[in-house]
Image (cartoon, rainbow, N blue to C red):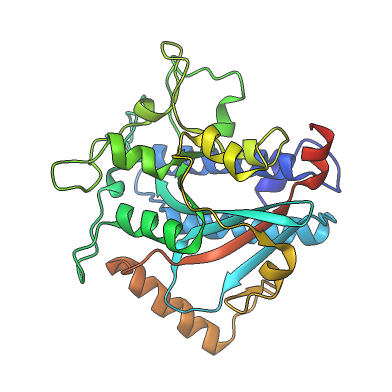
Length: 299
């Protein structure tokens, strides 16, 4: 397991340690794939690797405050995640649309772009950004983009740890308000340094995903909206831990590695659907992280 290589303590591992290790592994996977000729990597691969390894490490490392679930709906996007943060029995959930960085060539990694943010569902003509925002409103979830990154640039020297920026988050509404083209879709040329701070710019809206679970992240809806720069009237519906666990739309992932023929067929259909794109945001996975301990320690 590659994430285990980046863990900085012995088990039982903290959520903070796991999320930082997952980001570091993502940074290194993209670096490897983008610097070796004829190798490719996509966000679906990274998401599934993250989910698989987090589940294995949760099981073998005694991580009691983490649950990994899979959607029962076959019509899901295998790269997207719903992340629910639980504090004292109440959860705020985030809808994460995953996008990977692209580079100009195998030899040019000083910056990169998120060209696949400019995405339209061919069958309906809907823009993916609008589907994500609509999902957030209808379900009461906070819509974010989960960015998978790697850059090699001396101007990027974050104090938080360079490789922890392998997985970052950004408010989807910010992108819609500031980076849409004349049609209402997101632009093709949104670059890494447009969203992440460099040595020349100290404030940018994207931040490492481990900040959600390492303590200090807001636990009230009002403070979450304020932290993300969202309108105070944004609809966010808290859920109890019982509501999450009793939700028939998701089931706990087991650690079994052998797929049945039925599961193989389901995986094949999912891959075929992802080529076209789904006419709605429909996450494949749900991560439930209980952050009560770290938030109570920092309250």
